[in-house]
Length: 309
Image (cartoon, rainbow, N blue to C red; front, side, top):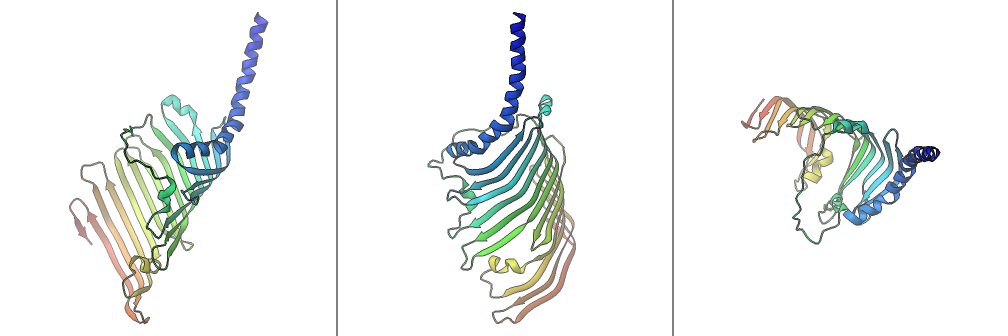
């Protein structure tokens, strides 16, 4: 009898770890790669494709390669070359959902507006036959959600508008974005850094701190020598003059508090400058030329609606 019990215990001691290992390394990635897209298509109408999924059941690290989300016409509108997630399961003992690291490498978003004015990104969901929805949703978090480190590397986006007679197209990126201590605990601050490049040069950057409970943002926006001529004809197509050159630079320290009944928005000692501005008429004759125009120490308070410089 004792020998039989020992054999049973030995069997389960071998079988359970082997089954767990097999499920984590092989079965779960296979299901996510082959069955999850079908399930999302059937339940939500989402069309996705996944090239490869890897999961380590001992370190709880997930790798997803070449993930793509398609619109109803089958075109890829969102894609991702590599997704990495490092989850910390022991945090459940502290009643937290803790992700140590979240990395998105080379994501791409296609911001295309067709000739009818429809944004392709909104076509990832099929149109519902009924708009009635009486289901109520509880938006509260079951447990605190924390991501220690988030990083988006080499993101790209293309904005295309096919409505003008000459379609407008503008490439954005690479875009790099990092967040540290993304937490929903009360008064916890997360640190954000965003850098956006146009034409192989860094043009926009944001460094900020944010809390979600209460909802507050502090930081500084910087725009350096942004070429305005790239947007002139698209934004002001009916103006009979053309901006052939001109650069915008901004430095905007900001404070935003959305936890109050009335939003508190203030800018302190912001600055703006326009450089090398040249406007020409239809005959390419100079109409306006401004070598440099600067505004310094701009202060703004939304609550009092006061602006000063």
